[in-house]
Image (cartoon, rainbow, N blue to C red; front, side, top):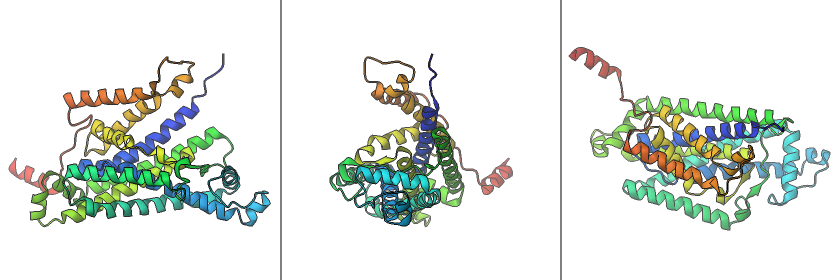
Length: 355
């Protein structure tokens, strides 16, 4: 009896959980705390993925004209979209761990900067409209950008996508060790993002976000710069989403327009609602549940156990998602872990004095 290799499934689950957790944290800051329905979240996710793919491909293209490529017997790369270019990238990445580490860190930083800038830039024209229209504006921006990338070969090879984005740990020969190591990096970055997001919401800035969400007019009367606060939280959330996109590109080693469809945004929104808006621990739980549904309701998962259903079960996760949301809205509308009340030192002094 042949043994079932579950390591690829475990690695995929851990990596995607880290990515979804970062995405849900970013949307929780915008929607859960500030009340901004960012239905264009997938756009900022794609900015990070395109940044990572394009930066990696072009840096390694330049490296293919240098002595390290000549020593490996590689021909200089002219077009990054060809098959030989993808092979050359993998050879260079496997033989130059220091270069790949620099590319990886640089891609994450550049993705955060570009994603944050895009979020801040889009916040100003979009925040002039009401929340419902804001959601539609950002959704339209995401779809227009996806159509533009698909039709423009200069950006990630157009409709065909950019293939052969090397994993930064490609120099590790054992694929299981390599995958688990990369999963550890993704989860560590997700933990760092959680720490930053929690510090933000526990600070006075977090209380301002809640004030803007609950009563924007009252926040303005109290002297808060509402437009600036919304722009800042959009920039922070968009930067986080872009980092998640870069991590995704390095994991799947491919980036294409069809990977960034609107349903990704709504999956992330479901994680926030399921776990509990304005509660990062709840979001972590919601992301965990949705990642399990996403990873374990696929034909490839059942194929590991020799199960071949008579119908395509890849859409089953959407049925499960809908059922979970309906049940959640009917019974505990605040999510699995509801929002915690804000407790400040002044409030505790007031409570002790009135007791």
